[in-house]
Image (cartoon, rainbow, N blue to C red; front, side, top):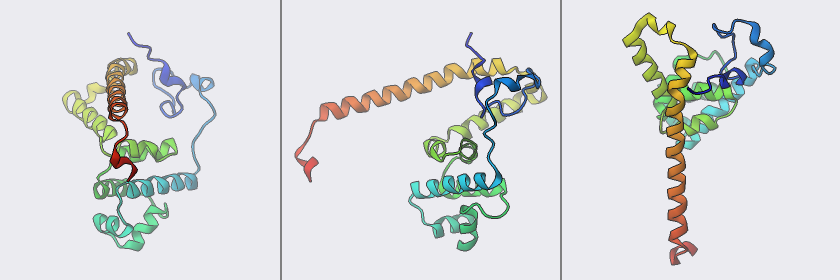
Length: 186
């Protein structure tokens, strides 16, 4: 059995009252990190710009991919106007990125998470699996306890972390064994 209590202290995960904890856990939570609307717009703007730059796309290319005028896209990337989730999904399609990771990055306050998920689509895959579970179980999904979810996901995330560690170790070994070559100075 895995410790399923770590999420209680995580303000990103436990931003609201959990049905199994009621509203009495407020003293466990740090002060709210909820951003003001303009702050969120600025974070969204930095996330969108980071994704576009990572993909080495111009404003015009993304605007074309989203089917909008360049100026309209510039307003969107600047975080101006009303934000519709549909636009984030359209942006993600135009930039081949993960729309759920973009939203999570806004909540986290940094583009780093969206960039880390840009190619592997981690959040999109998690949502796809959750959707498949809902299709299989329907309303019964509501009876699934948070501790069961955490117990199931903890080994999966530990395995992913181990794979990342092995990849880092392989890269370090390869780079260490390679040594400098005549081409390195050119």
